[in-house]
Amino acid sequence: GSPVELGCEAEGRPPPLLSWFGGPSSPLLREEPLATRLRLLLPGVEPDQAGTYSCVAENRHGRHNRSLQLHVA
Image (cartoon, rainbow, N blue to C red; front, side):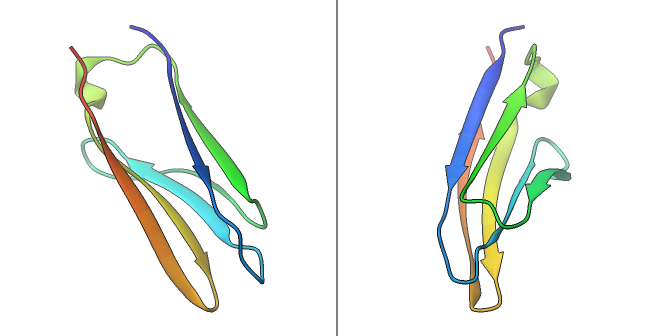
């Protein structure tokens, strides 16, 4: 039931579109164009929110992502 905040940062030219995907079915959770930083706040995390969360930074030159595994006890 505690909140969890995940952070993601990326720089590029042109500035990237940052997106968070995640959870059991990996839907798009949040995105922000032209940002260098994007936070994802998960208030009151429950066991059914455990899973892989990925931040994706994308512009016309390419796409990079980082993933983490959230375990909820």
